[in-house]
Length: 140
Image (cartoon, rainbow, N blue to C red; front, side):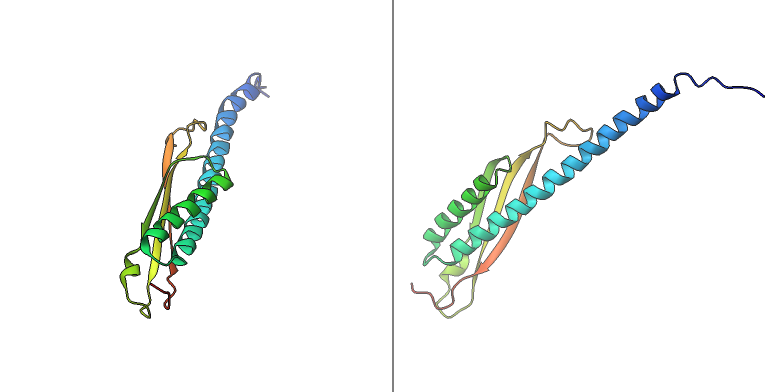
């Protein structure tokens, strides 16, 4: 019976397994961070769209939407930079009694540079869009 020497096999397994495990953990963190950021942006966009839909005119709607989205993102502490809020208030030009909606797109740059996972960019632009119906019988 030939006996094999198994010295060093644990070191070899660790050399292969530890980086693989670290990569897996990094990808899980990446997925979790992008998912929670997207969910936070959806909530911010929904808050902004609802705030804008309650306004009486397009100018107030844009201001209210930006304030609501910025406040929501700040309160959730998701680590976004370069926050942009685009508000489509074109339906405010419709006459009262005609259905319309306001659409809000919230985007931000999510910093991922601390992950140091191969193939994962240093930052990623995330976006979410929501709409809310404008009060059909609003006053002008």
